[in-house]
Amino acid sequence: QVQLVESGGGLVQTGDSLRLSCAASGRSFSWYGMGWFRQAPGKEREFVAAIIHSGDISYYATSVKGRFTISRNTANNTVYLQMNSLRPEDTAIYYCAARPGYFGRSYYSKVDSYDYWGQGTQVTVSS
Image 1: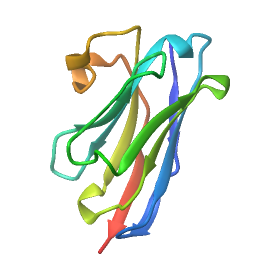
Image 2: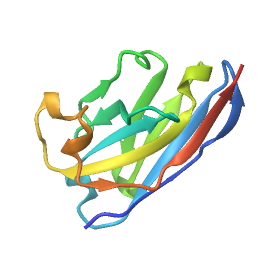
Image 3: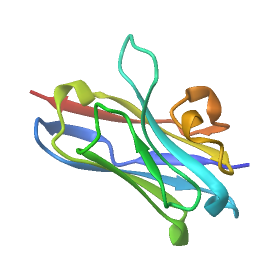
Image 4: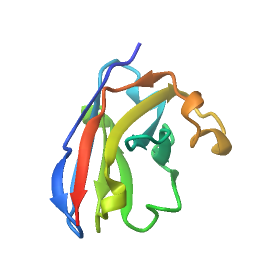
C-alpha cells in the first residue's frame, strides 16, 4: 500500500516556474514507477511525465517536453515535477500516481496502468 500526497501547486503567470512534489509513504518506494498526470476542467485526465523505479529513464508528453522535468529522491520518498515556462494551457489539477515494478514503456502514459493516486494539487497559469 502506498499513499501519495502532492504539494507545490499555486497561481502563477505565463513564463513562471513551479515545482510540484509528491511525497510517498511505504517502505518500497524505490521499486515504484511514478507518473504525473493532469486534468483540466471538462477534459480527461492526461499524461504529463513518468519515471521508472530506478530513476534512469523518464518519459514526457509532447506538450511538456523541454519545459518539465521529472525526478525522484529515494532518500525522502519524493517525486518532483519541475515546470518551467508555464503556459495558460498548463492550468489543471496535477496528480501523482504510482505502480510497483517496471511495466513497459508504452504503459507509463496510461491512466489505467497505475495502482495508487494522490489527491491532486491545483496549478493555475494566468495570461
